[in-house]
Image 1 (spheres, rainbow, N blue to C red):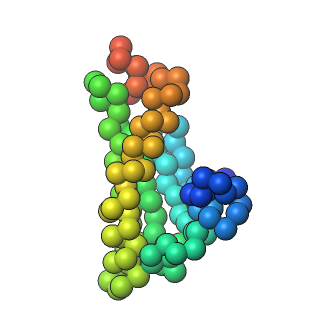
Image 2: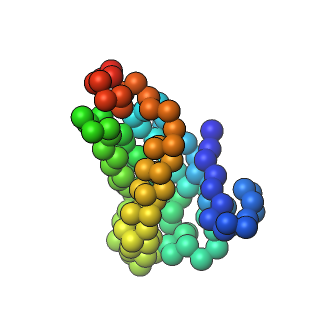
Length: 118
């Protein structure tokens, strides 16, 4: 299973500006673990990106859910530093897009205001 996203608004999935991730682990309403397969041209540190594991965790809270982003596999070196800096700067935009998407979706039981399931 994989996830693809075109970063060029006029682009198409599978085109040159598509980022492609392999889904390593998926736990509905809780966890998504990704490894990169391919990146759009110009991503800083793109050569080392396939070595990085990205984790998106959802933790229920009384107000909804807390989203935690983390990454492992970073090492010392200029490519890793550039890639880390890119995500450190861009994660706020990613989180806003994720928030907008979730707010448009039907609310899963775990996020329901009445408490839902654990």
